[in-house]
Length: 255
Length: 280
Image (tube, rainbow over all chains, first blue to last red; front, side, top):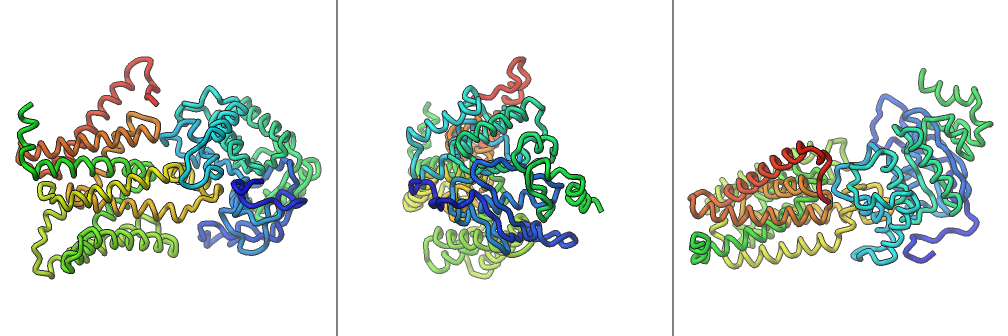
């Protein structure tokens, strides 16, 4: 790893390790509800694994992703990416929910993918030949090369998600966090995204994906993390999708 | 063409034109970020909160720009602190600071036996631009444009996706305050042209107009700058020939261009086969 790629990775360290992590709601409010979005969460994710994070609304999925991305700090506990605190890494990509993006913003698909390079390019410098090459390669890999000069608002939902995945590729991300990327997509578009995530396995890229879709999580992911402020269950789909654990994850919220 | 050249025999008209052109470019380019980031209210507030600084600088015999800059920075820091350290929403924090500082400025102005004309401060004094003012305008304006150019990709990422900016470990707090500082400097630059009460118009209107015709940020900045320049020049000529105040004339010209482009865009959308049509 060159200095341009953020802090070095500790050899042999797991991609992601959380130990007794507690976190408050990021807005600091929720006075009538639970005070913590996450309570004593511990887990480990190895390199190249594909994990589906499943849980009801308010289960702390977004909070967990922000902690992993290093944009939020735990109140208590320790969370490490490649053996270090996440806040120094630039190899962590966060693909936002589509509702969080301003699609009217005056940028083209190519502009958005190039944004993934900004960490490597460095302050006050312009994109070089290598950055353009990485941008084009990333677009080609997600099958969006023909869309390069389109304004982002002109894309379909599936195309929008693929462009943000291309941005993660241009960033040379080794850990990709996708916040409910399949919401509102039709089946073929979902399949296209999932196929791209399968393809990332080639490069040992680790993927965490938040979703509500249990069947899909069971079919396409190595492990499922069932989250409801605590980790209710974490393991291979067959072990996790047990009526007991589902009741504990979803039943608690309904009451 | 004589009507174009005839006013140029007066030096104060030439200076007014140069000031209007510089301000047109600087305000419109920075205004693109204000529009995209939804900071219009902040821009409006900041153009008013500099009043106590300007009045204090006047009484102390300092350059007015120094007082304005100090207040611009205090405004930015005050709003930032209130938003981060209390549960207040940002627009509420802006409102409190906006009103408080502006009232302080008006109070200071009314207390001192002042020769500052409040009307000049409120609506600008484009025809009173001295060559010293012009140099200051050019210098500060150049500084703003250079900063926007140098931090182009960082401001772009921060504006489009703040979370990406954070995961790329960009200095987001620094960039945020840098942008606020640029707004403060730009307001100082534009103070003499339109004054505080119409400041928001030249920050926002050309950029809003440009957003109708392009889907790329650099083009949007260039188009906004062009509209800013045309409005500035048109305003000075309109002021000269129609005997109306130049500042409002500049803003009226910008608003007229906005309405024309809005109309053309609406017509274009209705043309068959061009439903999604917008050039890149």
